Length: 108
Image (cartoon, rainbow, N blue to C red; front, side, top):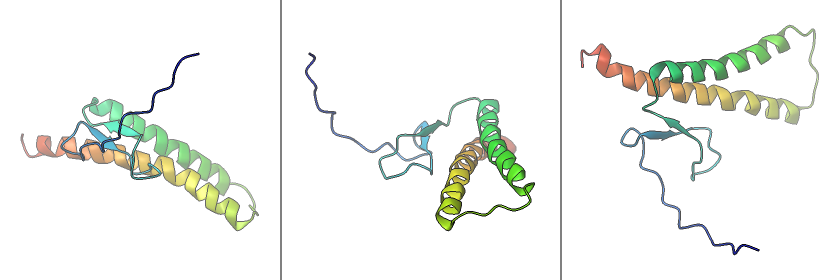
């Protein structure tokens, strides 16, 4: 049986934009585990944002076409969180794209 060793001490990542990786806003605590590669090609970043935003849009459009939706408030709260996480991820991705495109727009 292999011997388990403890993880090394955790060091917080360098804040974006100084580092290559931007922690997603939707990380659940101050020890982020989900990141965006800020150096990924712009079309890949836009596709990733588009995928997340379109997924939530589709769910909300389908929900809006139903006659009536009745449920308890805690279910609505969970549903709102379910929609907010990928929307926030999409916004984080678009923020990276915006930051990368700004120097180009200024002629740099």
